[in-house]
Length: 354
Ligand SMILES: Nc1ncnc2c1ncn2[C@@H]1O[C@H](COP(=O)(O)OP(=O)(O)OP(=O)(O)O)[C@@H](O)[C@H]1O
Image (cartoon, rainbow, N blue to C red):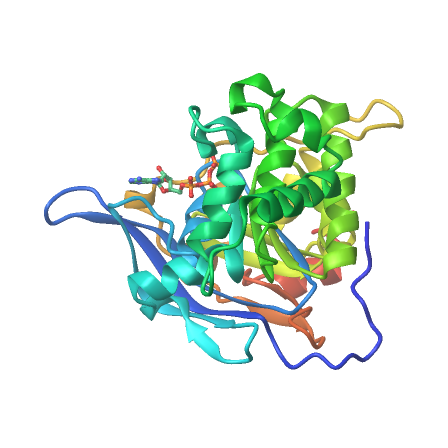
């Protein structure tokens, strides 16, 4: 578990500032479902934020929406996604034109998806993927192929792959772990300031997962990029992130430092999520798994979406929807906030974490 950097820095403000973002999917000519509701957070340079929550809570939708990579039926009908570019100017990703967006992706922010096989073109060699990426973003005179090959080799070495073996291979000739490493190298090719990773290691065995996660952490230290890390795996979140955001039914319902979330969760859902993970070591503790499932997007309950499953819910919870409320103020977007009407009361009773 890493601690957020506390020393004062020359931080010129957030790299990414997400304000009141809604993301929806069209489901018919006149119908749509809102998969992400009013999400706001700031991500400062060099920070790593994990987004956690059960399947279907909107993590992937949020990640895709931030870089405008949603499928054709996806849209971002509300909010701002402000990003401070390398030249110091700020862009609202929501309003970038197609060409600006093309230049923005890879060079400012890149995404690594789960299942690297689908991200590669099966008929192209790995070298060709690097070549295409570099060429697509060239502004001046085209660089020589040999020069690009050398740079690609360096990127592959960075993720601990042997370029001699990998550059000339087709994606199917590599193992899952090697493909995922190659994808990370490709995502880093143009020196992005932000990397969004969606379950990048889920399909891999534990040892491979661990090696990739360790390398990612080291690279983040070396290259100082920021990271949004989408995962089901709370262990990975604890290891890779200095901040965690819990999502439930499309909303961000708690955010804080990794320490806040794991040691002092203030939303009963976060607490239940943590309790549902069996401890790696220690005695026989029966995990208190969460009863029921998240609500359907089309039939969200009034009030707090978690209330029907919450053992601490009172009548008011079913009537009034809680906003994210700051419980502990810190700079650099590291405040601890929870969207629970009873969070202070429960904390005082010691009920959210005992
Ligand atoms: N292309 C789509 N069209 C319509 N609805 C979609 C589409 N993609 C996702 N959804 C819906 O949006 C909601 C959020 O899905 P999303 O994949 O973002 O959740 P998630 O938290 O990333 O889940 P997982 O961990 O399983 O990937 C789900 O209810 C899902 O059914």
